[in-house]
Length: 268
Ligand code: OOG
Ligand code: MG
Image (cartoon, rainbow, N blue to C red; front, side, top):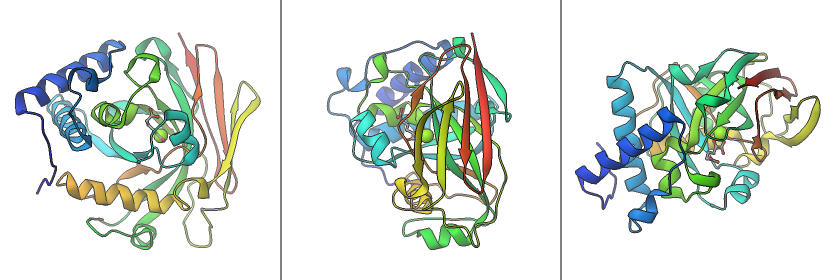
């Protein structure tokens, strides 16, 4: 059951969904949705995101998992928000390890290093805990997320970014999948390199003190969307550090303690 407290009419949700979809497909920057709908709230943002997900599913995209976003202080400070959010991930967003992403398909991409979870049991809210997440985790794997806000100057508010599916654009999983038993995800270090230089670094605890907390938060938001997290989901727990802008010619490597590294590069 969906338990969102929305203020937008169905027609406005469809209208905003089409606007975001157009901006994503044509790699075009648009103004924040709140400029036209100043009263819209976060739940309205999720209503637009739900409509976008339904539309992509109708077009044959497959849901492969979800992402938590704005889960670290570094990310919140960078974006000027203080509440985490979630978005959905489809097969069309997946990039192979060491793959090449075409920047011309995106507006102004940035990269983030994240710990991703592959689940082996169904999870559901409203009271999902980090312990339940860890018990339902098949393995963790390092990931790079390529985010791309469709809003001008990468400047947004929570309502708008949620409607834009949490800036989801592409993601890459790689490195060494590891069981969580015996791993302390809080103290795992991560280093983000661009063109051979270290540009950001951090540790797992940057994400809500433990990345599994971010996944539990995500499952609890899914409950509000009337969704559960099925076994076999790929879930990104959120950028550990601030996101880094990329352009054609750049190559990026995220190196994780115990989990190996994952890389991606960018062309025109
Ligand atoms: C929103 C998406 C944030 C993360 O890992 O924090 C995100 C944005 O910053 O555009 O994916
Ligand atoms: Mg992210």
